Length: 93
Image 1 (cartoon, rainbow, N blue to C red):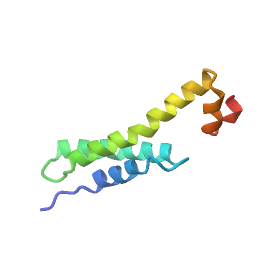
Image 2: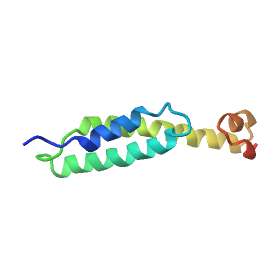
Image 3: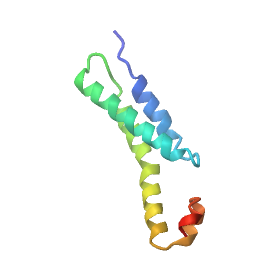
Image 4: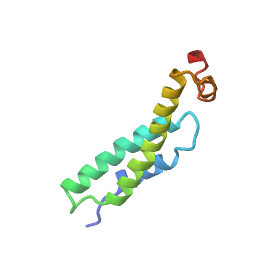
């Protein structure tokens, strides 16, 4: 019986879209959720689910835009007006 890797691949695909402006945070969250779900299924039922490495890569790639967005928001709030404008948060400047 073939192991299901659909969630792991979905996580990787959403994680690879981190370069798309405005959607990168949404896709990052989806990559994290799907990657964590795929990883937990692969650990709980290794005979039915696979793709641990793919899920981990999806989680890492999904975390990248979230980390940069949080860092940018922190810099924006701390007074870096240029970052506020570049992130589209001009109203916080």
